[in-house]
Length: 126
Image 1 (cartoon, rainbow, N blue to C red):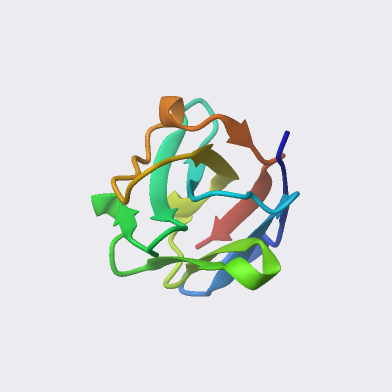
Image 2 (cartoon, rainbow, N blue to C red):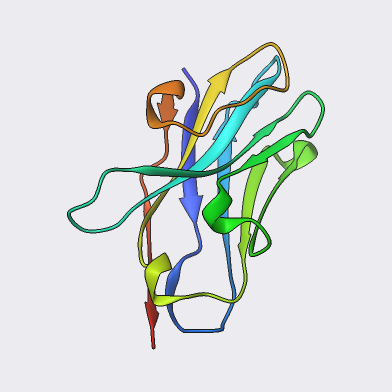
C-alpha cells in the first residue's frame, strides 16, 4: 500500500511563489499517474495537474496553465508542484494523489485517483 506524504505550502502574498512536494513510500514499482488537486472552503475538490511517471507526460487544468508546473523526480520518489504568480483564488488545501496507470492519459478528476496525501494548506493574501 503506497503512502503519500506532503510538505510545503504556507502563507504568501499575491504574486509570490511556492513549491509543494509529495513523496511516495514505497517507491511505486510500475508507472503511475500522480496529480495535484485543491479544495477551497465550501467548494468541491478541483484537479489542477497530473503527470504520468512512465513518460513525464503532463496534463493541466485550463485555470492554472502557465502558472503551475508539475514535475517528478523519480530517483527521489517525489512529486512537485511549482506555483508562481499566486492569486487569492489559489487559496485552499492542496492534495497530492496517485493511481497506478498504463499510459500518458492521466486525468485530473478526483475520482480518477486511488491514493491520497494528507493535504497541505496554501493561503494567498492580497
